[in-house]
Image 1 (cartoon, rainbow, N blue to C red):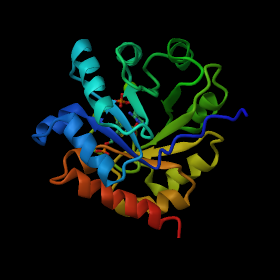
Image 2: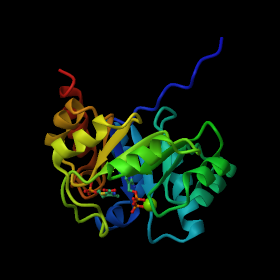
Image 3: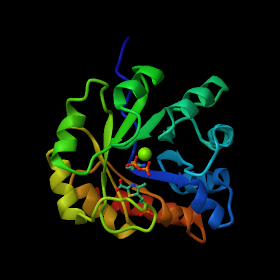
Image 4: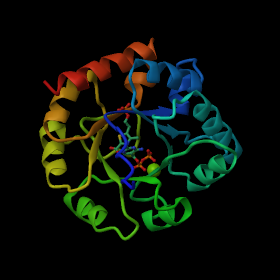
Length: 223
Ligand SMILES: Cc1ncc(COP(=O)(O)OP(=O)(O)O)c(N)n1
Ligand SMILES: Cc1nc(C(=O)O)sc1CCOP(=O)(O)O
Ligand SMILES: [Mg+2]
C-alpha cells in the first residue's frame, strides 16, 4: 500500500535559538528536551553566531534528544542540514527567509521528501511561495507583535492581520513573532497550523512548563 507522508505537526513549533539558550544558562539540547517533554511538536535549530562545525555538532546533539516523531528543521543553513544528515542526524528540513538561499536550491540539496519552510510577510510573498517551483511546504508569517528576538523582523500584524494573510494562503501557515500562550487559541481559530516561538521557551525559567502552557493553550483552541 502506498500513501503520502503525513503532514508534520507544526502546532507548537520551538525555534531553539542557541544565543538565547546560552543567555538563559542552558544548553540547546537541554532546552529542547525539556520543551519536547512539555509538548513541543516541531523544533527548528537557529544558531546565528555558530561556526559551521559548531552548528553541525549542535544539530547532532539536538537530534539525539528528539523523539522520532518531532521533526528537526535547520534555520538558514542547507550545508549544515546536509552534513548533519550525512553524519546520522534525522534532519527533516530547512527554514529559509526571503534573503536566504532560494527554495529551489534548498529542495535540490535536500530532496523531494524534505520539509522546506519559507518566511512570508506580505500577500505578494505568499503568492510567490504558493507558486514556487521548488515547492514550499509551509510558510512562516510574522510578526504577531514586536519582538526583541529578531532585529530585522517585519512589523506587527496582530492576530487578525496575520489571520487575514493566512486565510489567503493555500499553504499551511505558522505564525511567529512575539507569541505568548494567550495568543494560541486565536491563532488556531484564525486558521494558522501552528505557532513558532523563541523567547517564551528559550528564556523561560522552566522551558518544560513554558512549553506545556503553549501546548494546553493550543489544545484549548480546538474546543
Ligand atoms: C517558522 C519560522 N518563520 C519565520 C522565520 C524567520 O526566518 P528568516 O526570515 O529567515 O529569519 P531568521 O530566522 O533566519 O533570522 C523562522 N526562522 N521560522
Ligand atoms: C525568528 C523570527 N522571525 C520572525 C519573523 O517575523 O519572520 S520573528 C522572529 C523571532 C520570534 O521570536 P519570539 O518568539 O521570541 O518573539
Ligand atoms: Mg533566515
